[in-house]
Amino acid sequence: MQTIATVYKIGRGPSSSHTIGPSRACKDFKQHYPQANNFIVVTLYGSLALTGRGHRTDLSIEEALKPDKVKIVWDTTTQNLPHPNTMDIEGFDNDKILHKKRYISIGGGNIIDTETNELVGGNEVYQEKYATQILDTCKKEKLTLLDFVKKHEPASTWSHLKDVWTAMQKAAETGLSMTGEMPTKLHWQRQSKFVYDLSEQELQKLNITPMTKYLTAYALAISETNACGGVVVTAATLGSAGILPAVLLMCKKLLKTSNEEIINALAVAALIADIARTNGSIAGAEVGCQGECGVACSMAAAAYGYLIGLNNEEIFEAAAIGLKHHLGLTCDPVLGEIYSPCIERNVMGAIRGVDAANNVYMTRNKHNWLFTFDDVIECMMEVGKSIIPELRETSIGGLANVYRKKSKDHNGKN
Image (cartoon, rainbow, N blue to C red; front, side, top):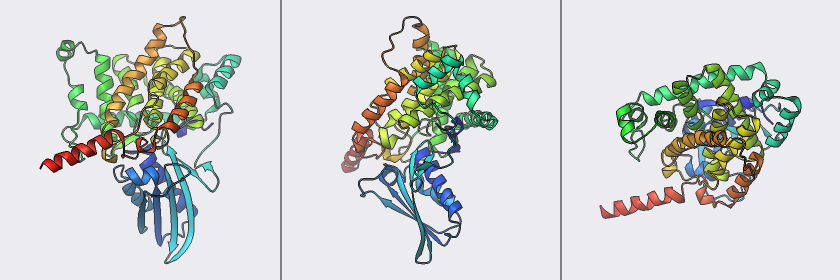
């Protein structure tokens, strides 16, 4: 299993699989074939082709390959792909092709080089790959999950986690500092600052707790930053980037949690994502939004569970509850953009993550745990394969289709 440092990637939104992943693929290609600088053709397939324009995939590719001349081909018809997020890069010298390389963007900004079938920039540090194996090891060696991570990870990981926490806070600050309409045809209004500024009197009228207010405001703020192409952190993806940090920011604000403890919680949360991506998927194009917001909710539940004192088994149970109640969730971004329903899902994922951990805390010593976290990951993959392609980050079905039909009706009336 990979180092947890690769779970958190700091980069520009709005989509880790559609912006950070393709950008990294292009940079990897140039690193291996620097002589291919006359002309480069990038062919995008599947979800990358169908939603790439809305996700700003073309902009990230052009930026990564500057100053080379680039042509992007949007291939929406090729079938039987190895993965919905497949892309080919071809380097030319005039009309002569120098090399062609295929990459797969597997979610969270991670990419696979199909020539080697290995993760680019990967570093295996864990022998265990399942939650049950980790729990067994921790029991035998009398380790907490945090101890387990510290035993395996190099010092550089902890330095990276500090940078991650700084970037998460800055992303929230950016979102909370801006108001007005966002750059989209949807005429989407920023909401985070409005929610953050709600008074105690207004909250009391609706019996809304400060915890709900701050979870909502922070999740909105980071999601708004992400949707506008700002700098955010994959957790586990950019489409779900607001969930985990919203919980951690709420803890800092209301519970006065120290930065050191938040760094530790980030490590525990990353272990959850590591297991999920190793044995399942965090790509919306592969398994729907259950792999993005569902896994992010699990991360938030685990992080919050750690901070409120849950033990190893209870932390994994909180993560399982977080994901269980996202099973079957489709990925149907309107216009191929990360606005609706993505932003609202970040809010709900943050609230559900806290609720999942609190549920475990309140029912301690009264366990009804039928399924392990590993079981839920297995189920997520089974359910994900049964979700029709139109509902897996293609913007063809679901809410994206409802919006398209409404737009046609509206235009027809005018």
